[in-house]
Image (cartoon, rainbow, N blue to C red; front, top):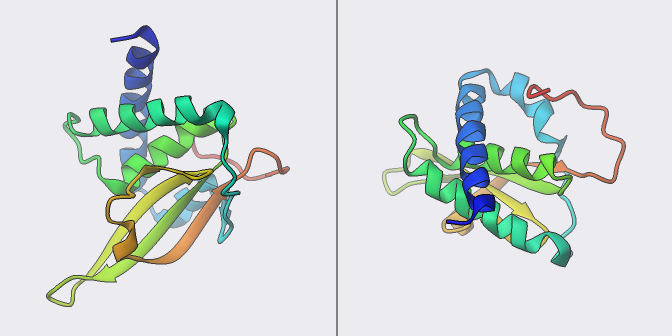
Length: 148
C-alpha cells in the first residue's frame, strides 16, 4: 500500500471516530459546522482534485467497515466532508428521507464534490432530499466549526 493511502486511512479512521461523536450530539449543534444550509456547491468537474477525492472515498469506505463503532452514511459523509475541507475542496452533504416497505421513515446521507459522489451514492436515488449543506471554499463563510 502506498504511503499516501496509509495516511488517508489513518485520517479517515480519526475523522470517522470524530464524526461518530458528533452524531451523538444534538443535530442543531452539529449543523452549523456542515456548511451553508440548503445550499449546494457546483457540479463542475474538479480535474485537479479528482484523484485525491477518489482516494478519500476509498479510504472512508475501507475504514468504515472495520471500526468498532457504527460508521454508516451520516458518519461517513461528515468524515468525508471534513477530509475535503482540510484540503480546501468544496462539497455538499445531502440528507434524505424515505419510507420502507412497512411504512417506517428511514434516513440517508451522502456526500458530493463536483460531479463525484464520495459516499452514499449507491442508494441516494431512493431518498427525497430534505436538507443540503454546502461547504464552499470560495465564499467568506463565517460559520464556526465544532471541529476547530
